[in-house]
Structure formats: structure tokens, C-alpha cells
Length: 235
Image (cartoon, rainbow, N blue to C red; front, side):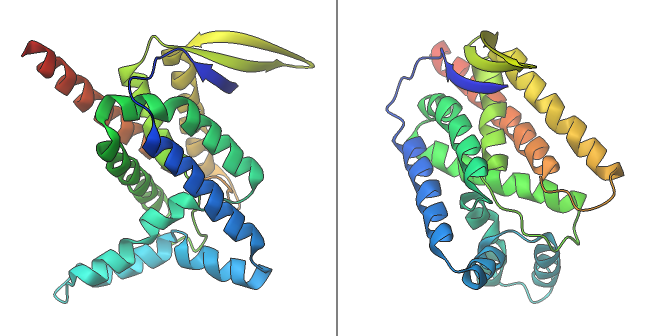
């Protein structure tokens, strides 16, 4: 299923959402221009590597605690959200962010949306770390942060309609699906793949648990935002 647009109206110009999309594109263009060896170093420097995080955090969160060292060790949890593995990876993520991110920004506000986006991205990578703490494969992509956006959308706009491109064998059709159905199916698919990944042999190219974790964090944020909105209406 490929989402094309939604029916939830914007109530703010999504300057942060557009900025995030542009930043992701610019970083990917920079990646694409790097020679192979430099690209390798770039990905391993700014990607989120579970084994490195596990080692660094376990060493820092002890008697020799240093806030600056903690920030340096945790930096990849932020930078990895702006790296991508290919054009399809980038385009798919940016399509979802374009369709669903503007409404969340409109609901919570510009600065809060930026902070929540980065928080959801970092949280999703920690979920992935918990599933495979000794992996040496860099985690890259905005998928976890965007999964958080989808989780918040699921709570805040469940009755919005999503125009969806739906392949049916050799045929393609367009349907309007309720956001609750579209996003619920998306989450179940991530959860199924994450569960199968645990039983699979070999390296998986998709961090499914990051998607699951990001969506769950987004659900919590959506519930909090909904409660806050209701409280404001009471006054």
C-alpha cells in the first residue's frame, strides 16, 4: 500500500516538516557525492551502531560519568535519522513524512514537533538496540522517527481518509482508507516482520523493531497531545 494524500486539514504551515524533508534530501545528496571509502567512514561515523552504543553507554554510565561524553556517545541516535541507504529508502520515507508529518506539526506546534521528531527517532533506535545490542551494522534512516509520526497520527486523526495506491496482482487501484485501518495494518506488518526477524537466519536489512518502537512512542505522544487539547478546550 502506498499513501498518496490524506484528508486531515492543516492548521499551520509545516515549516519544520518541510525543513526536515529538505535536510534529509541534502544529506543524501552529500552521501551520493562521496567516494566509496569516504561514504563507508561517513556511515559508520554518523550511523547508529548498537555494539558501539552498548559499549560507550555502559562505560559512561558509571563512576566516570561525563555529560559531554554521554552527548558524544548518543549523537548517532540523532544523526542516523538523516542518513539513507538508497533513493527508494529516501523517497519512501519522505513520502510518508510529507503526508503525515504536517498534521502532527500543526497539532503540537513547530518547535515541539522538531523536538518530538528527534526524540522519537532516538527512541526507535534504542528499541532496535535492545533487540540486537551487539550488532555492528549501522542503523540509518528516518523510518523510526516517521513511525513515531504515524503512531501520533493514529491517535489524533483516526477518522482521516488516506488515498492509497493498492496493487492487486497485475492491476492497480486507488482506495480511500480510514487512517486507523491504514496505519493499524502498517503497524501489524512491522510487528510481524520484527517477530519473524528473531527466527530468521542471516542479517536483516530492515530494523523492524525500530519501526515498532517508534510507533509505540508516537502512540504515547499522541495520547498526551490529545489529552492536552481536551484540557485546553475545557478552559
